[in-house]
Image 1: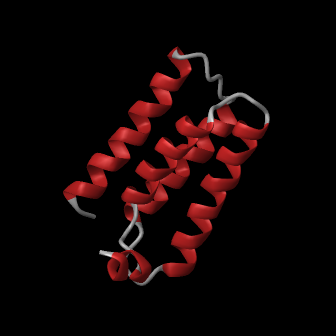
Image 2: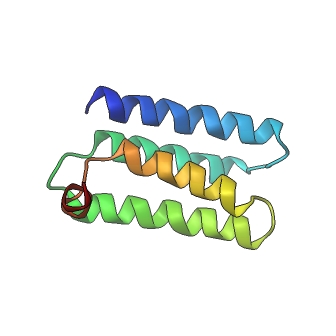
Length: 98
């Protein structure tokens, strides 16, 4: 875990709280899903590609369902997903892009 990843994790947790005040109502299971994904990514180690990929997919599907149901905008989902990506270790693809 790095400071950058921990800050991203805290941003995800804060953003989930802010969304509730902005009218994005998450049921407890949805909130738990995103909390668990962010925490799992935070604690994942470099080399845990399968776990990281699974957590990213769960977050992406959950956010897509919220956007599809009209309960969250694409911009809100993109912002939250981006912060979730920063919670995890940098992937080889991320390193190559930098």
